[in-house]
Image (cartoon, rainbow, N blue to C red; front, top):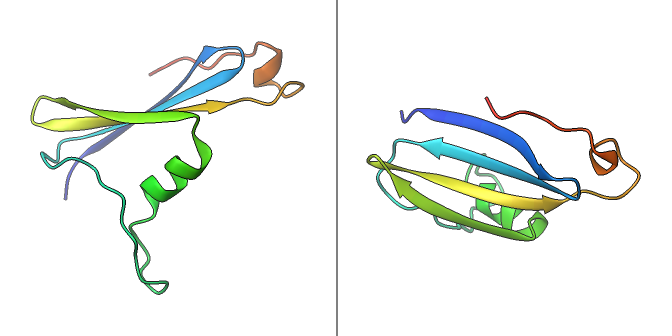
Length: 85
């Protein structure tokens, strides 16, 4: 099992940046899982929801990041911020 470290933060008032880091050396890739398979949909969801996303290698693993728009009128859209751990 590979370790994961999740981080969430607001980088701008109109965007949320999410990053997931793990220590698996292989690059993340989109899959097309069978409907009965319980895993393998993460990047499909990221690609469908994010304005932008990518990945960067680091220390034998990788970080996959995504930027999502925040609708105006929501708490985050009004300037509420979340700190990165």
